[in-house]
Structure formats: structure tokens, C-alpha cells
Image (cartoon, rainbow, N blue to C red):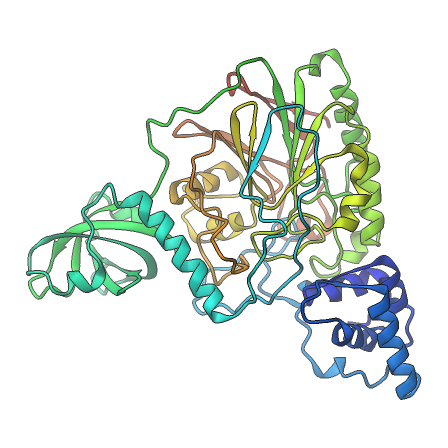
Length: 524
């Protein structure tokens, strides 16, 4: 695609895992051949850099001028374009493409932009952050990094299951006597049906793999339909006569204990939970936002001291095909400046916590580090706490797991409608709580950045689970965990209309932190 505008340059750089300084974007966009200019700038940027500076852009342009004047033969035309606009496997609901079913053998995620270290914040109120990996990214995208993160996932989730079953490693099962009672804790590596309609589930641990047969007439057989590749479960049963297969008697998920009792604040205080603002879109609902922020200044909203935003502050650039035709603001930096102005309408004494989403200018692979310093500076007027996606935010003693929610597309695509659907997004979130992982399946739509640990595991049960992304309002309780998908602040775009997405716009869920009672306010 011709890189005719700064927006297209930003999109192309983002697809290669880079941010860029504004002046650098302008220089590249104004080059005689912007596409080749981007190619040269990437080549001029050191391997360990995550942002293309103005100096990198100038070096690329100067080198080209010395070599022959115009960037005609920069080589970009010889490389495949893999940005979001050209990716047919990017089923983002907020972007508008339809979700696809899982296929094995997903491609390795490239190394992408790393966030910056956490900023200094006012700690006069009770806010604590856990799991913020901003500035902690260590993955290089090599095979061994993926092995390490999956091993970490297995060990942590297996630890939640081992106390409930008398498990044996796969290599030990192979040596046990036939017809013995046995159990295995493993990662789901394969699910398939037999000719007779039974289910064969293959589990993998650190020693190998072992097949488990779930008979179709067993009462728990329907649980197989809830399984996703790469999640960690336990299966109890009886070994076959030849010892080569485990006949399943039960399936166990890490899950939230049914007796879980959430924490509450020791005073009456409220939090507003919103997501998917999408400033920069032609369909951003500015009037609804003004009504919301005006209401926050009223006596009725006096108890609201916290505002939690679960990603997609802006519409972004190049997130889905032909998005530029639906943009009101085409420059990504201008979008964040406009968002900052809207954020200034929130009462100045309100504590704000924000995580990024898939439309924001951070890497797409999860976990997503928080915004870099340049974007933080643009949004610094309100002194918001800006952390990674996901993060566990504890407010007044109440823990809130904030996750933007890209994996919900995959959960909804894979599971039966009664278990997960777009009209009831909280049900898909229930599945993530059950699996104790915010993005269990890898290899489909959800991108995974291999780090030194799996930041997507739910080690602790949250009191509130807050998500967005799907632009639908949904809420309920799963084993006493208040689960909220907070809708959006963007009316239906032409692209969403073409794929039958009808958003729930202009809603603000308000939670009483002392009781966990929920009130839904509508501003349209």
C-alpha cells in the first residue's frame, strides 16, 4: 500500500514492531518514496531500539541521497507486507473482522514495541498494582522463549490443580499397572472425536504426552466442548488394559473456588469502569462523553473517586482495512492529544488507571506494555496511572483484574453459543476465570509475546474482572467474582455494520466498592 500520509507511515512502522517520533514520521511521509524510506529507516535503527528517532529517519534519507537521490530502490517492494491492514487472520471485534476458528501451527509473533517504566504517581489514595510488566520485557521471539513461557504457564496452573488430584507425570503413567486409578495434570495439546463419537483429549506435561478418552455418555462429557488448546486441566480416570490410554472419570479446571469470598472497601466509595473510548473515530460519541463527565461533577457522583479505563483510548491507525476512511483524526499523536483534552473533563481529584488495547499505539502481542514516554507526556495533564494490559489493580482493598479482552474473540469463536457469545460477553469472561488465564489459546487470533514469565496467568482470584474490546455491555457474577464488560463510546461504524456488530455505546458501570453492588448509567 502506498505510504501517502503520516497515518500510513505509523501503521507500517507499527506492523514492524516500532514506534516513531512525530518528526521522524513527518520526514518519512514527505520522502519521494515513503515506502522505501520506511525500509531504510528500519535498517538504520539499531537492533535493540524500539522507537525510530528523527536522527534514524534523517540518516536513512541522507544515505539514500548519497546513493542516488530518491528512495526508489530501497527494497521494500521485495518484502511481504504483514501489517494489520493486510493480515487476514486478525479477527478484532472492535476492528470489525469476523473471528476465525483455531488452527494448529500458528506463526511466531515478531518482537514488537516495548513499553517504558512506570511513572511516578500520587499514592495518597489506596491503589496498588500487580503484574505490570511495563519496562520488564525480555523476550526476543526465539523458540526457546516460547518454550519458557509455556513451561511457566504449565507450572503455575498445574500448581493450582495438584492439590485436588493425585496426579502422575506422563512417563510414570506409562509404567503403571493396567486398570489402575490415575490422574494427569497437563496442557491440552489435541482434542478430537472418535468414529464412535467419543472424545480423545491429549494432555502434555514436561515429560511427554498422554491420551485421555472421554466417553460420550458420561455426565461430564459436555465439558470437552469448553476446552481450548493450551489451557491447563486435570483428568482423573482409570488406565486401560494395555495401560496406553486413560479412561476419564472427571475433568478439573483451575477455576475460582465456589466458596470464594471477595474483599470490599471499609468505606463507601465508588469506581467507574469504562473502556473503548475510540477518540479519533468519526463515530466517537463526544456528546455522550460530555454528558458522562458533566455528571461526574454532580453531587450524585460524589462517591466516585476512581475511573478505570480498560483500553482503546483512541481509534488508532491501520487497525483494520480502509480504517482511514472512517477516521475523524488521521494522525495517531493528534488522536492522543484529543483524548487528553477529553480526559481533562474528568474531575481533577479523581484517580485514573488506564491499560492499553489493540487500537492503542503499543505492541499488539500480549502482555502489552503501557504507553511509551512520548504518549504518556501527551496524556500527563490528569496524572493518570498508566499500566500494562493485563494488570491487577487493588483499590481500597478491592482487587480489579483489568484486561482489554482481545482473547474474547477467540473464546467466542471456539465455544458453544450458550457458553460464550457477543450478546453476553461476561459469559466468555467466566470461561477465562474458569481457566485462570486471560488468553489461554495460542496460535489463532491472540498474539503472545514470550516473556520470562506468563503475565496472563491469574495467580490470584480477582474481586472484580473488568474487560472491554467487544463493544458489548455484559455483567454478572461467577463464583462471587463481579464480572463486567463495559461497552464502548463509539457508535456503529460502517465496517462494524458490514459484519453485523451492534455496539452498546455510552454506558458507564458504577461499582460500590464497599458492597460490590453495580449500577449501570447510560449517557445516550
